[in-house]
Length: 207
Image: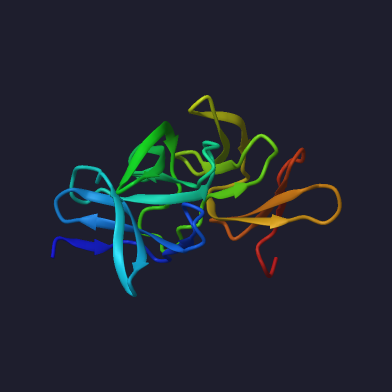
């Protein structure tokens, strides 16, 4: 009675590597704000497997940024931005039994525009040293490439965009350029971003 699902697309991921799919969703408590919840199927029923500690205040939200083995633990973790509209903090959750524990955090992020329906403002890229999480800064005009090292988030690079970000998608590139990102900007323009290259903007459709 005191919770709602405050999410648009639940994520289907085998978090613990047991061959069974878990469901990751954002829930919100009436008095304590947003949290991350994991659901699974047990004996043919949908059950809550774990839930993170809520933010602690009503009307406070979070947006999931990516799911991968960022910490190199042999299982996947959940990265999210807490309060992306008011000084967002990037946090990393590890599923430990019936708990979701924050194991790393860093400030200065936003992966959602207040009031927008679009939640896909971050992406995960594979790298030999471990997954790279690409997340906008709190102005959504720059992208920060974040990777875990020594139990902490480490910034690999920051990339300026030719406008404010609306949507960010990972896409394989042709040839040897490796994985790329496709950024849709609030202006309607798109920018293709590949490793070692400057963003290549394209005009909005019809121009």
